[in-house]
Image (cartoon, rainbow, N blue to C red; front, side, top):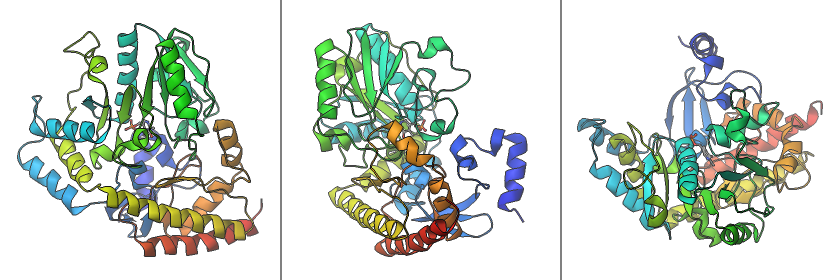
Length: 423
Ligand SMILES: *Cc1c(COP(=O)(O)O)cnc(C)c1O
């Protein structure tokens, strides 16, 4: 029989580190990853038959929970008609219409196969449209792994000794300026683009301070720079119109991913028609993809977005409110320093006394070892958190009240165990 260990051993022989995305290797929490055999709703089962209540949910891609019947049926129906053509399909039009109708100010989108592609294409488009070179990003914000954005990125990149990556040349990040989150930077008129996670969810969870997003909008307008909201996590999760709708600030460009693919590989970037018209074939900015707008992916995305009405967002936020309050209570009762930031349906676990407003502050608590020990104590109890201190929790629409209550009960025991151990 396959075990987690036997599969990980095999994986490590043929896949670097045994994984296809570094955070999955459990390096920052210790031990080896569980190999998922299947998922249903709020739960996944590993290859040894062990069940976990899953707060990873593919880092937010599975907002309905795993194997939602409508998503599965949409994928099945699409597959029967063929899986990829290299010619346009109805599904692409429908998904683009659905996204643009949901988001005020967003006229057009181009579909990609990942959030990374959406981010890197956004940059090329902004440079092409403005004729300028400089990009401004915020420390701890993650926009995928394209070269020019791998400077002080959060997520599992934050666990590296250097905040950037080997193999990224000084030239590739030479036009990237990294500034602290939640502070409006002074911009020069060589700035093509300011890109930001409107709610930062790759350095734990850090919401924008009042006035921050408005300040970015004004700063960009002052110098003629474009503003991009990377809504790969927040899009169709905070609300149908994403963070731009919730905070009432309109960027020039948007990046999407995760939720909009219904669990299949999809990303999108977009903006007003005037900006998007710089893209090939209308304009000189090249961008392409063999599998972009793939029929299975658009079918899954459409099925997922079709389930996301106001009631769904209200329910999701209600679960998150209950979970955040419960976790904060039981973890602090155990005597551990804890702050559980929450924005809409997203929450983070910050094992520090004071809330973090930027990457530096997030880092202190992330690196004190408490997340790692709490993660292990929860995993032992069948609750799967993300295997890294900079990730957030993604309750899905399949997480019922009983699941939330069970999580809080088990968190109480897990926190007590952590508090007893060496600090
Ligand atoms: C996950 C993520 C990305 C990258 O998306 P991939 O599909 O992993 O390439 C970009 N931006 C943000 C905010 C993300 O969370």
